Length: 127
Image (cartoon, rainbow, N blue to C red; front, side):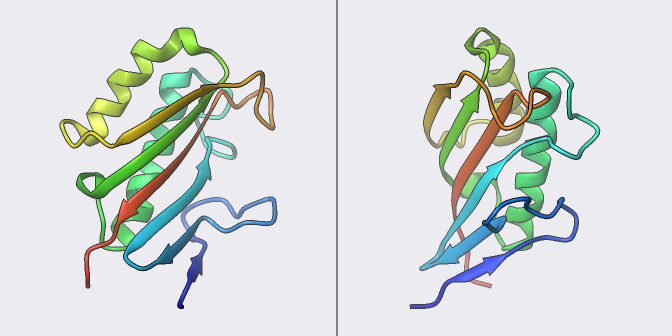
């Protein structure tokens, strides 16, 4: 069994005991991503989600995948009332390639300037 654990230079290094992604058996697991350390930190949920989706897209592309290969997405949000705005952002990135999805409202995330965290699972195309 081969697991490929990886961090990416264009994304802030993890501050905890985890890596940005783990690849195994044609699947790419991307850790919960936030806007922490980016220009979107402290901004609206839509701005943070957009930044996070750009990070996720960059990781997927680096691993020969794309939003067309998105299998599952899990979103943790601090304000469920922002859902319609969040959906608009989501459709901009994966359009009709709808994944399985979970949405969880949480009291808070690790920083008061962070209002959304997104983790994803992608299929990886052979190189």
